[in-house]
Image (cartoon, rainbow, N blue to C red; front, side, top):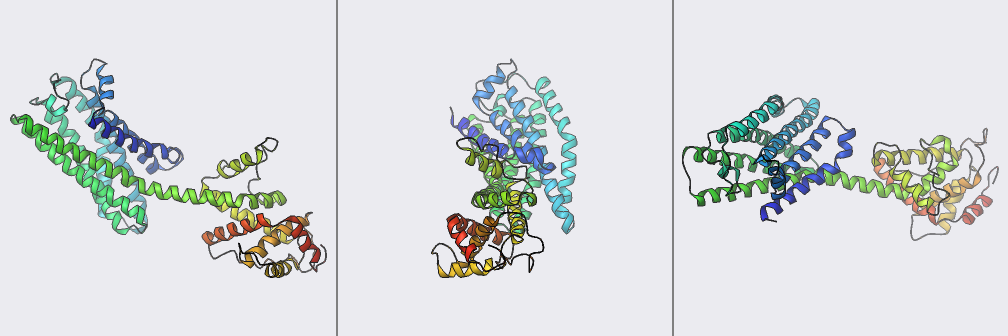
Length: 429
């Protein structure tokens, strides 16, 4: 494997990983999610076509340099859908704040590029077949293999115009977005991608100048080699910067999913017991599909946390918190009126080094209320039992609060809860 192949495989791997991570959002998402996935997939194929293995496989068809044509065609497809993504993102954003001039420019460029993409590929294919002479197989570089061919400036000119226009639009859009994005990781990603597109424009300018030069005059081997080294370095650098910059939003989303999964796993035991006690108030009942299997509890937990029909882990986490609150409200109709006061007194009298007394009292209230069992008591004196525990000021604080309650809940024994019920001065125990 050559160094060039190693770079190509590395960049293609980054792009393929991005494409794989975005399959689900592309399948169920909006146009912009599908466009970004298509850009990653097409550009990954284009980079794979730069490798010796891919070129040898395509040359085996009997059409020399077919790998270069496939590489350029898939790159155009990737550029086209990338422009579609950029246009979709900034069209959505500008609906709320008024369309910016740069957004309108990118929309025009995208419309032109979309309509011209098929024709561009068709013309390039025709030039490849009819105007390019048989390649000089002594060199690996496409420009050197067809140096002096009249069709070369037409073929490469079309490709570079396409690439340069797209890179310029993306550089402007991502650079502007980086200035106004409040999220640090996304801002860094935008800056990296904007810098990458600036390098791409420089790459196009240098390659275009070299194509014009070798069309009108001969150049030395050392000059040609220096040009290939310089422009290939720019190509690798801007591709890596763009790939790494595109990871930033994904890494942030991945971190959010990881935190949501941890919260779901922390809340699951509490949610499951409350949902089993009040199944009519939860949206989806806990799984019992694997209850008879040796590891059934773990499998049912996995199914509840990762395989329920919610749109995402964050939506599922929100459902868990709502279900827990609804089930607690149902328990208020069953529990003794003085249970909260007794739970607080008990928590203050038996301090726990792991939790705050309010957290411990709330968990003890839930454990004791679950032991009441039976249907809600209609007409109970005083109405629902008081539940004077503060859940937090927003959803993020509520999740943190419920995680602490769930941790305390697991440490409370049923015997302790029964003793609390027995000592509660209410209408029933």
